[in-house]
Length: 62
Image: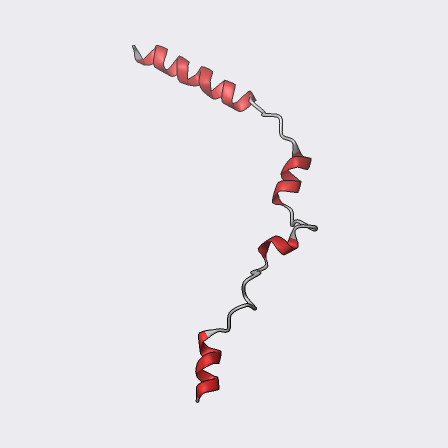
């Protein structure tokens, strides 16, 4: 392919990309990136209080 045809193809692709604007659902994006209000307990370590830390055990023995 010659340089002229190659440049024309690149120009055509560049114009298509410049004019391309995808449909974005901003409300869905905001929900996905936002902080969950009702699911805050999802990230709480439910096993944290069941077992004592090793440092606390060593302090009690000393």
